Structures are given as structure tokens and as C-alpha cells.
Image (cartoon, rainbow, N blue to C red):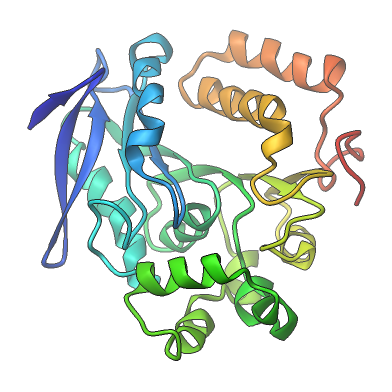
Length: 274
């Protein structure tokens, strides 16, 4: 184990692969765990600034690369959801991994949803622009997929360009899988997303009442609404860490001052239109 900034470099085993991840140990072994994972073009080191929040919030934080990216050699497939489980197992002696929040935008969020079906320790998810079903199955979505996204997906999945279509079919969440999701999901969507079809989150919100969608007039990743996304994420982190008072203040700020409310499971947000 090696020190790196505010945390340590740890390894988790997924099948025959070792996956390196960053970890910030909490002051108490009963502190809840937060697992962060980006998407197909993000490295875990880009998230390392979050490690410093561990002691301040009173939770453990682990940051892993997405499968097929950086130091994660596990190919992107349904089985790659085991990366979350492996990270939780690897730090179980240092924190309460039975209470885990995933902060995972884009494809990392998709993988967290797959994991939650098989690992009940994953209790909640905050994601931004995660593909669910239509992205993987809709012919128009496939035809309009940016070339760089297609190339990054092929690399992450370790498949050829011609083999990508079959992998996409396998990765799509079935309607009953979406409906069966047990954990609450905070989903930040963009109504002008050039990668993820709006149909993905619209259909999912109807199927599962635990999905709270916050949609903004923006492109993929909601880059022009970072303040709102960070506020929603910080609120979830505080709730997960048991910082109820601070979470209430942040929630009030979100609802009253910034007027952000979910499009689904609540009044229409001023940040977007359904």
C-alpha cells in the first residue's frame, strides 16, 4: 500500500485481475463508504481531490478507474460490475462497507446499477448521464454515437469495432432490472445530451419511483451546470455520512435558492423541462 496525496493506493482482485484504486481511510472503522468511479474517458486521479473530504465528512472514500481504463484491466461487461464488490471487500476492515454510496457519472453509473442487483451493500447512487437501455439498443442512438465514444467503448470492452454491437446488446438494462433497482438514484440528465437519449432516463423514471431525475438544458455531463451537480452530490454525501443538519441546509439551498427539484418524483425543476 502506498501513500498518495490525501490517501493510499490499494489493490482489489477481480477474478484474475488486480485493480488499483485510491483510498482515504476514515477515523472510525464504523464510518460509511463512498466509492467513486468515472466513465470511459476519465482517470481516477482526476477525482483525487475528493479524498480530502473523507475526514471532514466522516466517511471512507475509494476511487477506482472504470473497467478497461487506466489501471483497471477488467474488460467492460456485465461481470465488470464486480469491481465495485471487490473494492468494498478490499476495504471492509477499515470502514462500514455494508453502507456504500456510489458517486459514478456516465458509464460508471450504469455499472453501479448492475452491481446493486447482486450486492446489497451498495445503498445509493449519484450519477450524471448514465446509459441505461435506449443508448445500448436504440438504432438511432447507435447510428448517432460519436466516433470517439464508439472507439472508447471498444477499448474499454476489449472488443473490435465489429464486435461492439453484440457487447452493447448484453449491457442494456432490461425494463424489469430497472424496475427492480432497490437503491435510491439521483440522476442528473441533460436534455441536449449528444450521447445518451432522453428516452433513457424518461422511461427509467416511469419504471422505478426511486429514480430522481434532475434535467438541465445542457449537453452530455451537464458541464454548464457543475454548481448544481456538485450541490446535489454534496447533499447526498452528507446524508450518507450522517451529517443530517448540513444535508438539510444544503437541501434547502438546492430547493429554495437554486430552485432545483427533480423532474420526476417531485415538482418540475427550473433547470430543465420534462
